[in-house]
Length: 209
Image (cartoon, rainbow, N blue to C red):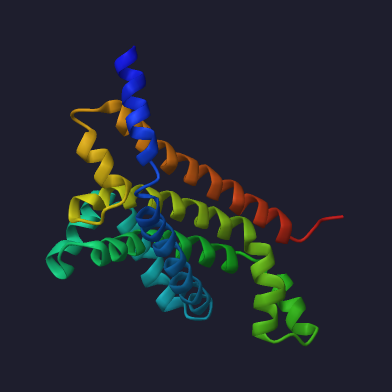
């Protein structure tokens, strides 16, 4: 028992050492994924051929294990921090594109036609009609994308990304208590972001009276 306590006390001061790298990996890649995915999803609304290609590609890639996505990046980009971020982006942006497109394109056509009848442009309809009604699908995609980014940020330690993955895999065969302690911040980050996105969705969603 004393050895366990000593182990915990030795590890605790260091559990936030990899936090910066992990936040850049998971958070940075997630943010870039949003910047790429949203414009693509909007373009897909008005280009059905592109929508067909991207949605089917998203379905295909989502079936590929995350570790395989990381491994595929290595022959083209090598190893290190930057290839790791790119691998995370490739994995995270697809659910955002797919869910955003589905949400934006699932709006009742009569509502869109009615909006056109009121004199609204396509851009005004997108901002005032499509996006507000697509919030549930959009935020579901964002939550899933961050779960992927947060998890793959650990897997990318195999290609030299650093972060919590390094500490977890370094201790996995010799110090399970350290592994547990290093996983805790990753779990807390995932829960925090999920709650944050839920709060944002609730705040900006149109109220129904």
